[in-house]
Image (cartoon, rainbow, N blue to C red; front, top):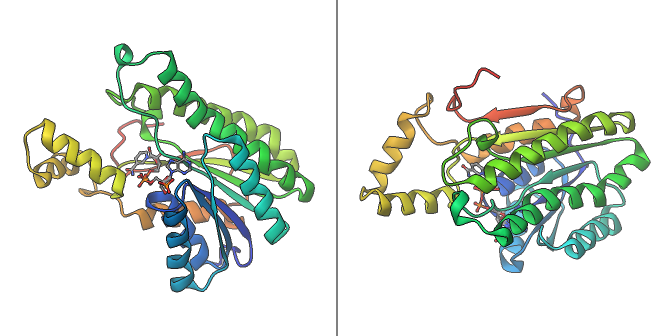
Length: 263
Ligand SMILES: NC(=O)c1ccc[n+]([C@@H]2O[C@H](COP(=O)([O-])OP(=O)(O)OC[C@H]3O[C@@H](n4cnc5c(N)ncnc54)[C@H](OP(=O)(O)O)[C@@H]3O)[C@@H](O)[C@H]2O)c1
């Protein structure tokens, strides 16, 4: 199937590694032109070089922190200066810190709100006016299965990501008149650096080897393994592309069957 991504301009936030990188790479494999961004200049330059080497795609790397409104604005301006238009936006960032109710003071709540909720709001606020002008665009967020099954010790993620999911559903109705689609892709457990560090923490806390921790996690996943980030990247590329032209306002879970909810 041709996804229709050839020469389309895709902005991919938090894409120097992990799921964001996999999305950027798959968009490039489909012929898209990329604007990729993350906080660390070396990381994002290296990510751009890897994608260019593998795919020959046009890739613009930019330093951007989702918590910093000025850097979001400068990333958008740079993209528009370079390409003149934007067809798609992937919204992504690191997750909010862990903790239960008693662990979290106001500053923690405010930081998580700034990162996860306001980061999403500000990315959309900067990019959408350019999509409205051409009455075309696709926005995709990465959230977490915590929106379906709250995760112990991740209260901030549970709350903020549910808020983001609700925001997207509301915006999908508002933006449909401009030809802009808005969807949400929810990862289960994917083998990224972040999951590797979580497994290492659990291996210390549970006094188990890394293999034993993984065996327990795999036993809760019907497909019996972690997802490969590339599997996430392919699904995201489809949702961002015109091949998904009648899909909007939806939340999709990609988790090897881990989530047991019917809806
Ligand atoms: N992997 C999973 O199984 C899983 C499951 C559920 C939810 N998630 C969520 O999915 C998202 C991506 O996860 P991941 O596993 O790909 O994480 P990761 O491997 O830790 O990668 C995070 C990426 O985000 C960038 N980044 C982090 N904070 C940023 C910020 N404030 N502004 C801009 N860029 C930022 C990092 O690059 P720099 O260091 O260069 O900034 C890096 O490229 C996270 O929100 C995570 O909580 C992941």
